[in-house]
Amino acid sequence: MRKILCSLLVLASSVASAQDQRVSRVLAKFDRLRPSEKDLAMYRLDWADSLDNAWKRAAREGRPVFLVIIHAKYGDIQSGHC
Image (cartoon, rainbow, N blue to C red; front, side, top):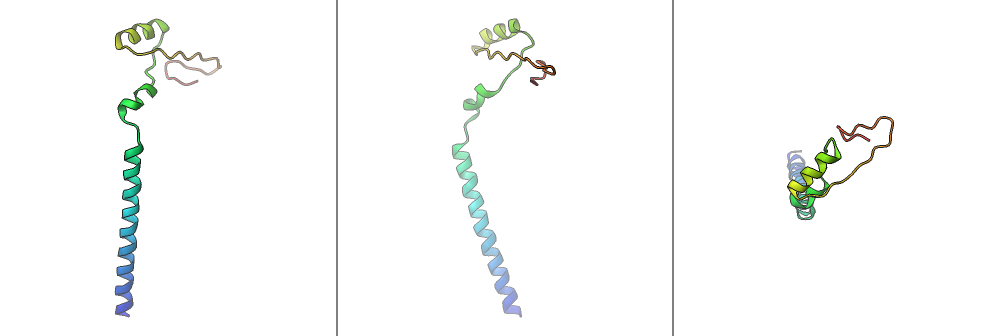
């Protein structure tokens, strides 16, 4: 009985070790493929409450203006909800 218990513990520890290695490989691949903060910067929307404010800030920051026209009953430009 004691041999069986020891064998099961060894087996369980080897399975856990294999899973840890697999998780580590997946996370390493994710880190290699994930875009950097600089690459993702263009996808962050920084809402402005008027087109005039957007143009001024875009000129000051050297960034483009992305115009969203909300044509919906419940649209709210302040929160970005369309």
